[in-house]
Length: 159
Image (cartoon, one colour):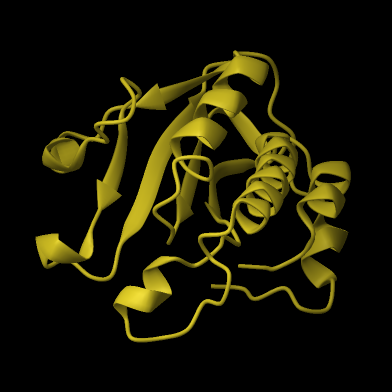
């Protein structure tokens, strides 16, 4: 487990991960449902800024995914611009990826797209809200080995 800029990871360890989890920074609209504060979380500028950051993170993270591996994208916001629209943008630019249907989540299918992606809302009694989509890299090129020296970097947590 690690937390480094996705651009650095894309440069140093491309095509090495079977699973990449992207819990993207977002406007945090669901924090309000938790009783927290998220000033400006519904402002169009904040939404656009976060959507653009999410696109950058996803594009870099895609470089990490080994062939036939998976990329899970999730946020804790309700904004379609940060959720379904980011997913559609990603799939348009990375045709080697395909959205994967998760049968256990079908009842939470987003009504805003035909992509298999899922939304949870506070009124469903499953928390304060979330969005997720699972993407698979369908490429059959070559997978890279994780360089041993990468694992010796400060901040790397071995699980």
